[in-house]
Length: 263
Image (cartoon, rainbow, N blue to C red):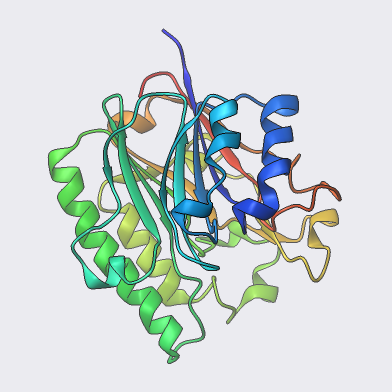
């Protein structure tokens, strides 16, 4: 039985990051399935040929200059879904779904939001509620589900380098954390926390403060799995190789990679 590796990575512009990703995949790590967020381009501008040369088929739900998500897979993809029949979920290009093997993969880029009372805060809360409703229906019909991506929420004190620094900050607000918990309580498990219950490990560091060099970050990127699938998670880690580059220019996020014995 061959294990399958799956990665979530907010690339903060795929066209700016494509050479970095190509180097990472050829020099550092083999990944079977890449779930990308914030690609910041429409489908016709996505670098399909680069990924094809690396052995990937790509499904893209893109948006010009903003948002956008993609699934790039070395394994066959079926039932690709880019529209979800909900105005909140479809307002911006933040979701894409595909079936690989027996597993339904839902790749998401949750809105960053804003401070409480702002329009962007309200949209983030709406998005969480709509995604929770969709996820409940999905879990009723599919036993194996992976929900992964950039959730723009650090769930607990362990998920920030200093809780006092982030008190009252976007991404660490009480209602954001509560919304994220409700999503997980639909029937998912945080694969990283299952395997590393007390470890501090981050996936995002502010460009402006050079926080990567002091590890002053937040864990905003997650791989969440339904119960039967979480049991198959053999390992999960944050790979800092792409984030610690000076050239090609890195994203402000690092990829999270999990290995599953069965998908």
